Image (cartoon, rainbow, N blue to C red; front, side, top):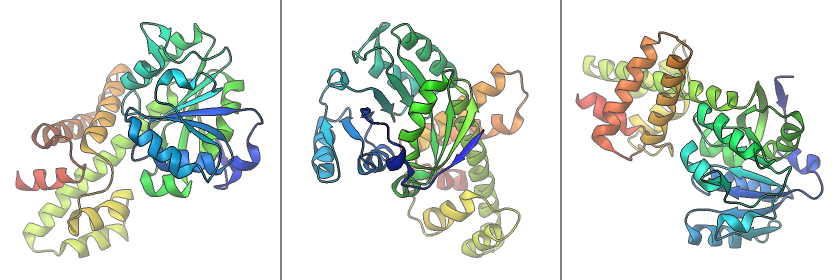
Length: 310
């Protein structure tokens, strides 16, 4: 089975007894994701690089379920499942391992579920390093942005070499998901996520070019968005990004330009690794890279203004 459709609260019914979950990374996506996990009835230990954020969220969720704050990764040692939601695969590895040794002294049979947008090749290597300590890694990146994280309707792409570990991870991730897609071996979830975000990045770049050309010709930008969203040009970008964050000028989608660029670069490297000539991916990588070099750490929708001014 490649897909499991779930109800948003299904994780509560499916929760195995005795599972204690450590959740690392309490940012834009991690906070609503772990909130659903706590409310589903899991015993959760929180950790973030910002101790104040960790303590504050633990206090906020105290009335919703069993939750504790960990000021150091070592405080997650009692957990049987570790979920990571971090910026890069390099950060994921640094939290889990230190020169090959476990930073979190997990017991044999523990499962690490990396829900970050990570590099699939690094995920495979991290999984190999964890296996030396009898810890199993599963990759389960998400798509759907903060709104769907809060609603528990994220799409999740899950890769694993160990079926027993996958079956333990699935009830955990189902608390955050409308559907879980089984993508194959370890690393395939992260590969799928990068390719998905390349497609989204391509749609954003293409619609930005179209919007700029139309505006210069005299078209109303909101009319353009409405037509695109009701026509064959429809995409997540036309439905959720262009109107509120470009036309209305909010530029606050919640997804940063560095993260989108990172994901598209991962997809670009993947294209090269499999020997695929990918001129569209080349162009999108270059376009986003140019915007990132000029703008730095801003919302990804700010790239529209950079491209428009050029």
